Each structure stands twice: as C-alpha cells, then as structure tokens.
Length: 337
Image (cartoon, rainbow, N blue to C red; front, side):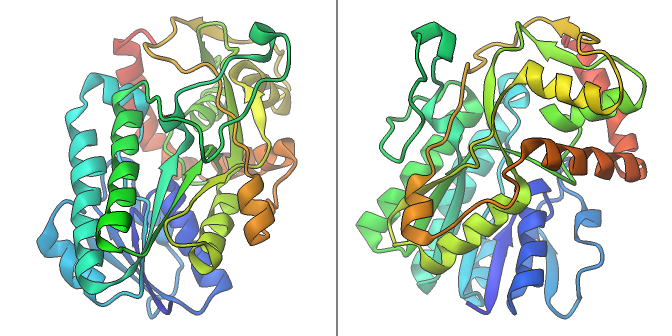
C-alpha cells in the first residue's frame, strides 16, 4: 500500500493519521479535504511535498473522487461532519457528507478494487448506564453491540457503517470498519469538549459543563487512534469491525477538574449550563479484539500525561485557535451554552 488516499486528512484526526503515515511508513499520501471550518491546511504544514499532496474537494462529488481512488492502493475514510450540537441545529450536511459521501467513495473503490477502511465512532451504539445507576461495573461496547444512535450525527455515521457492510457482502469490496472512542490531542477545533475547556481557561474564563457533568467518555489520544487504524489497514480481516479504545473512561466534570488543576485553579471553578438534547450518558470501548487479534496497544495509557501534552500544545499554538474562538463562543452563547 504505497499510495494512500486519506479523506478528511486536513481535519483533527485525519491530519494526525497523515503525520503518522509520513513518520512510520514510506507511503505517498493524497489528502482529500473540503477544508470546512473544522479543517486546516496548517495541520499539514511541514510535511514533505514529495510525499503528501492536498486536493481540496468534496467526497460527495464523484468527479473529484473517481480519479483519486483510481490512482490509490488504499482509501482511509475519515471525512465526516462530526459535531453533535451542529447536527441538532442542521442535520442536512451530516446526511450529505456522512451518508452520500460514503456511498460515492464505496462506488469508486468498488469499480477500482481498492482497499477501503472506514473510520467510525462509538456513538453509533447509543449509550450505557453509569456505574452508580446499576450498582456494578456496567458493560462496554463490543463489535456485537446493537446500534442505537441518538443524534443526527450518530445516526448518519451508523448509516455509513451499514453501507460499508452491505458493499462488502453484496459487491465484495475489500473493506474494514473501526469504531473509536472520543479523541483528544493537537489540532482539534475549539468547539470540541477538551479544547473548548482548555482555551476557556487560557483566556481566563470558567470552563462550562453540561448538566450534572457525570456523562462519561472513553478518551484516547489521537496518536493512538492513528496507530490502531494503520494496524487494521495492514493486518485486519476484510469485512471485520474493530473497536478502538485506550481504557480512558472519565466523566466530563473529572476531565474539567484535571484541566483546572493543571492551571492551578480550584476544582469547583466551573460554570454549569443546561444539558443538551439527547446527551448520551456513557461510552466505553472494549478493544480486546483489536489487541488480541492484531497485537495493537496504546502508547498513551496515562490520560493525565496525554492531557498535559495537549494543554501544552494549545498554549503554544494560540495563533491557530484564537481566530476560531470568538465565533465558536458566540454560537454557544446564542444557545445559552
């Protein structure tokens, strides 16, 4: 797999994967990205021009997708509309990108018999109860967990997963799927939970937490996500789904308190805001299949160390995120969040 097409490769998770490929393989990478608000050419800065090429275009545009797939050995599909709050305000772009865009890619890899890996989310499974709601440690998501999406975002990602499985079974497309837990790390847009809280504190404000703050997410550093996807692309069995997680379960309020402690602020220096609609209670990944079958292990097994590195990155790269911050917070303020 010397020629790899990465959709959404200028976004947060996709750009980290491109950096991983350049650092750890001899692959030539073409990035196809629409360069929406959540993407940034700066995330690809410094990569060798003779190995990485950026094509600005829409994955739902077959005329753009077709020639790029034709010249590739593999397609890694990261491109997606992914912010839950935005999907509640306007679901249409999520249907267009996540479902129609995936369909266009699947048809192209089908015609050219190109290896395909589809990057998805644990949110397709809905949510799990908290520990104190059941009196014992509750189960985690596995590859056999039924789909129960609860937002337009997660519903469209579930739909795209089903398309991939159908194209494998019906047309013999050589595809795998991964469903990953919540990512954190550099280059993440400030609308997302961890960078929003970090940048709020950097700018001297109190971080905001939805509801009671007890919603649990299973955090993984984006570098570990990248290594897992490459492992699946190299070793994964065609037609299989692999869950990616690093045993990083933390409640939202505990994450915020960890950020506050890093800055020397009191644990209770928090602004509580009204919970958002359809807010899933708990996500948790069981990644045993990926680890036992393919031999993958996460590098960042200490969440606090990964968080400290992420905070340092946002402190050092204020010039990148600061222009995005005012517009993002104005949108939240209009919704009382």
